[in-house]
Amino acid sequence: MRKIGDLVSIVIDNKPSVYARIEGIDRDIKPHWFQVRLLFLSFPPQEITWILKEEYIEGIPFTMKDVPLQIASLPEPGAFHLQPEKKPNNHRAQVISLEELRKKKE
Figure 1 (cartoon, one colour):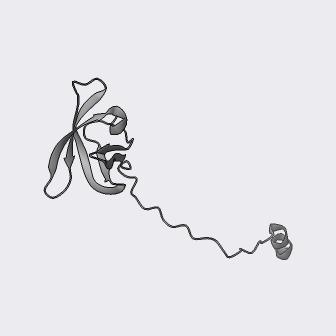
Figure 2 (spheres, rainbow, N blue to C red):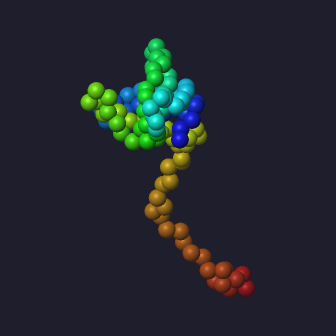
Figure 3 (cartoon, rainbow, N blue to C red):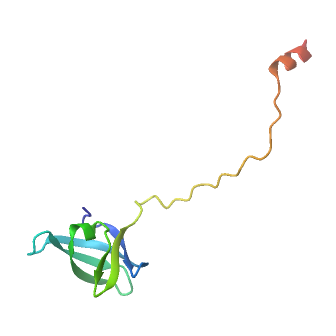
């Protein structure tokens, strides 16, 4: 299950819309439901509380007032480093026979 401090993306109507940090996860009075406090990292920052099942917290899509929502994971820190682009090796190197080199030295 996600934990306090995790950064997530909130997907609204199938479009990534805002980043959020999980501020708290507490059991709700309804069994199998949790009160999830989210800090929307927007201008200005806004804190909200959603009452969700564990599977919704983990990323299964759900709806609120007929609007599709999803809490999506973000890559781990450090995963954003760009990898150097590998260029295809289109030229062929000449193969030099060591045996022929030895013959030339003799």
